[in-house]
Image 1 (spheres, rainbow, N blue to C red):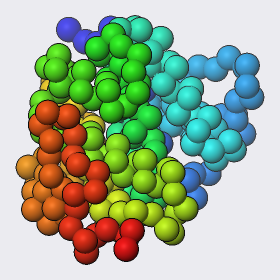
Image 2 (tube, rainbow, N blue to C red):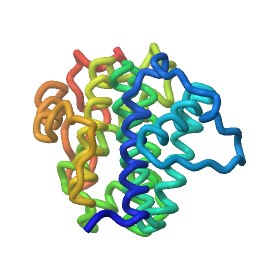
Image 3 (tube, rainbow, N blue to C red):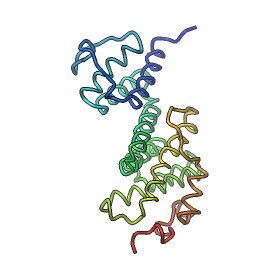
Image 4 (cartoon, rainbow, N blue to C red):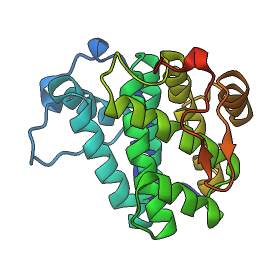
Length: 241
């Protein structure tokens, strides 16, 4: 038995979502018939035609417009109950692209915002990031290891967000590692919450991420406060002087 029309649309949209993040826009040569203006209706029967339509939009308006359309269609066909899965896949793709382009600060800022939103949704809360990480761990939505990565990412997000970009409290190596941890954590959440995987590859395992945080950087985990002690890192990585 083949896929239903709805299932086929979801499958194609996911393929196009991956394609948009992995294709080189400079290689796209859109044909006029696929340049659809905003508000115009369109129809595509094959995967290649879907790529032609979204590729033309990518070339003309950039990735943001295309991703907004694809995620909107995915939520429409998959249902509102799957919106977190759709946004998690998208965030994984965005963060992976940031890492490939060595854009550490955007990776940390995006992931911090996303974690706050998705943890609040999973726990039914409306809390700031530190508090909702604690809540998520207390309610078994995440493991202690996942909480460690989330709190480490939060500390680094705050550092790059609240300080001049070239005068941060933590050294750049700490931020670079935190950016790698974003993909590790997001992939881990995808597996534990949805028993699923995406094309984005994890650079380091959770265990190795934590080993670097604690053994190399020297951060101390406070199990009572469910976070790393902010200034417990080794002086080699501490820029405060």
